[in-house]
Image 1 (cartoon, helix red, strand yellow):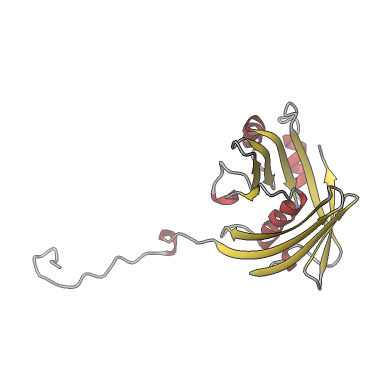
Image 2: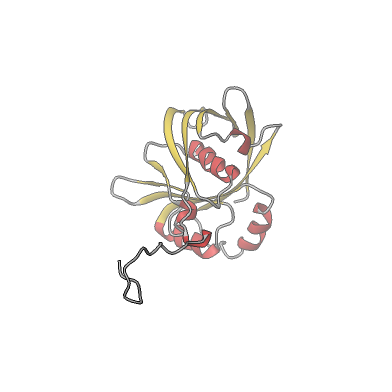
Length: 197
């Protein structure tokens, strides 16, 4: 190598700070056994969840829970936080038309309206204390979206969803009469769904 002054020599690579490095997703694997008596759906799904660096264990486990609530052989985990133009979960028919578009948290109202125009059904699941205040502000803006359902997830009991998060998980989800239980064989979180719309 030739230095700027014409001398040959070793040039070390430039030092990169943390801001220059792309943060990688953490990969979680889950075997999810679903017994949904409300929909007569009984199946096991092998899921790979890529947790974005800014995503919490709670939010990742909510994605897994919502997968169980909508489980279908065509349901797929989206890129979520990694791609703002893609939902957390979605289901397409064999022609590529979007049948279900599912968002978590407090999505931007414009994105929800756009999703309602692209999909047969849109679901938003809030899962923390910000869900109901967000909905109070968003509801007037989303009043004309006829294909929108908004639900709030509430976890009761001693076990949080985040406590069930492991890099490799064996989970079972039971759904009956609107009640949901998600557990790993030793601990079970009881979940209630409150329909806001």
